[in-house]
Length: 96
Image (tube, rainbow, N blue to C red; front, side, top):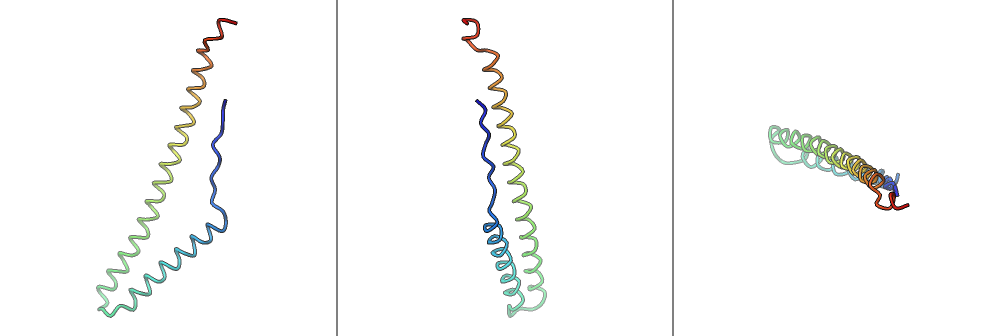
């Protein structure tokens, strides 16, 4: 009774749409910062904050992905152990 979990993969169109959306959002944010009517120091501060926000978002996405993958492997191991326990302690085994 082993069933494998379906592999979830993003389609190429979804990947391209996500990449384009990220590029548009990042470019428009940087353009907005560049054209703000403020002195260079606050503009540089906002640019550095934006870059830090982007890198921390990538880091967070990686941590969430790794946590999800580790839980999937753990679930598979737990299911295999339960199936092994069922196979070893079959109540009908001694009756037959």
